[in-house]
Image (cartoon, rainbow, N blue to C red; front, top):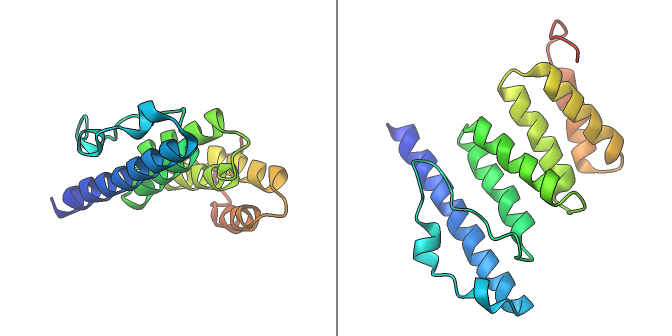
Length: 152
């Protein structure tokens, strides 16, 4: 029960921060339609542990999507975290958050014991972003994948 409350709180907090960031970013970009979102209703969760959709037109949407994934990850909602990180990679492939989103996708696959997928994702991080912190962290996590785990 306590873990469920912490999960709801973390996701709600992340969504609140993301919503505030989106509203501020929209306001700065002159997007009046999205800057006037009612924060309390935007943060209201549509279902248990689920976050409201992030407006894609916002200049901070990629950042909000990434941090939503982080909130799911730290609360061990790995399937939701993976979905959030995949969204960053699919919708914002050139984002400065892309290397970290790819890394965290590999981490979620690792936590779900999908070792072949984790190995593939983490190797891609090392290849696509060779001089990044994400690449270094991916190499470290690759060493932790069990030797007898299936190869992709």
